[in-house]
Length: 224
Image 1 (cartoon, rainbow, N blue to C red):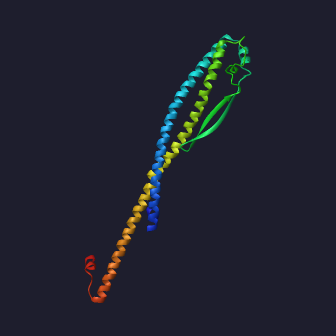
Image 2: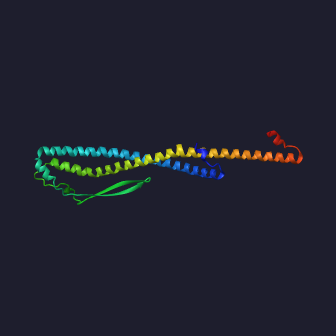
Image 3: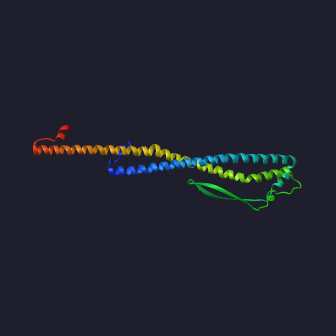
């Protein structure tokens, strides 16, 4: 039993009581952190769901337009049209601390601000369906980057929630009960030692009275 290894002294009792107070306060703070993380995590999950549906719908439209463009264009012309893109995208990443979790944030910029630079071909030999497909992909790019950001944030949040949950459970079911049991054990030992000391003092007093006056104290007689 763990309590049997505790040194039953008042100093140890004071130390354990301070430690229990700190653990109880830490348990409450960790529970509050876990609840707030869960609230933000659920908000991110809902945002992730909406973004994923939007991105999937955009990709579906782009694929549909590409299929239509391919049906009316020769494969060689289609491949050559998309071979050398004019526009470029630059991605900057940094992090933001949310409840001790460093979640990513993505910012992007294009090589040129002209929206027509997304078309890397002339319009003479291409289909309008190809224009629609390229435009659909360009329009959905910000949502795709936001989706990647939110999904990664959800993964990091979930990992932090699990870690916090384990800490809360360790405090609630292991550390705090163990310290409470040790404190109870020390209190019982100290009370037992105090009673034993009191009984010994009373017996010594009784022996001294008997040696000096030839009679025992009434308290000593009652104890016997």
